[in-house]
Image 1 (tube, rainbow, N blue to C red):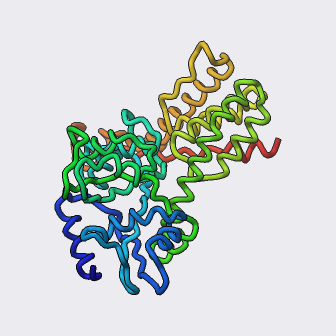
Image 2 (tube, helix red, strand yellow):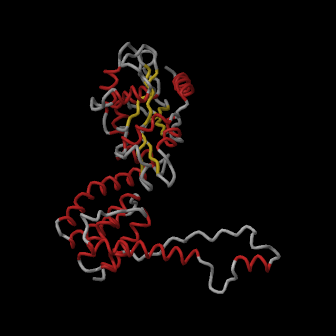
Image 3 (cartoon, helix red, strand yellow):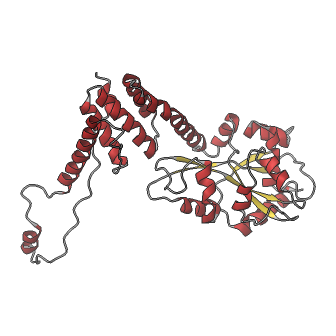
Length: 357
């Protein structure tokens, strides 16, 4: 198949379903001596992933999957999304997949609760929606084996494509949400020449996953009274940077509790203030938490409220709203200007303070 016909086929497949792809696809130009397997090895570290390249570029639509030097191949890969406040799973699914009902794929791929908003600050992995043209009837089992390593249940594909049964028909187009299309180290380096942020986004996600893996150990340090170890570990995790909102809350909670147990209520107060900035309604549980820790938590809550109140109050000596209106020819019932938004509290980092002791 010529390069032109390949691109026409890909374009034809892209148009009907309206799925938003990542901006600026990774493109590989075939060089002498390369095969689909060697290209798959180069980008994914697995030659068996050649089936993904074949499907993405429509190379198997007429029974052949040969390539020629100079042919441009689209290399499908997962993308990443940095969560900001206010985003929902439904909005993200609409953006990346064109359908809010596909939100479950995003929450499951990132081990987050679909009933809660995405974790602010998280670097979400966005599974790639690979288009697969069914070449034989009832091919779903083979598709699962080829693209999901046999580890995924076919229910995810059926739900993603709104299929009522597992039956497929020849010529049917399925979207396969693949979360395993992660680039190898060599693939990241090649992609970096076209997309400089791909490797950085992948590194941020990997770092956040490593932090998640360490949080249970941090909790166990505190639970078993290993407070010095807990403080050291919490400070190390904070120093890694790129934490999500939930990770900040979890680490500062354990750090504050450990510092208070070490008779550093001042530092524990600062840790709890940073925790409350991310999640103001945090509750530690009266029955399972010492009165000393609960007292510091309430002090932190009160300190934040007082600081916000002070920032929202008019400067000393400023005229009252009614007087100000009268001075400008208005009345006391005139609309009042909204007070300036509360500035972000500048709390000293417990990690820096703890290093002095």
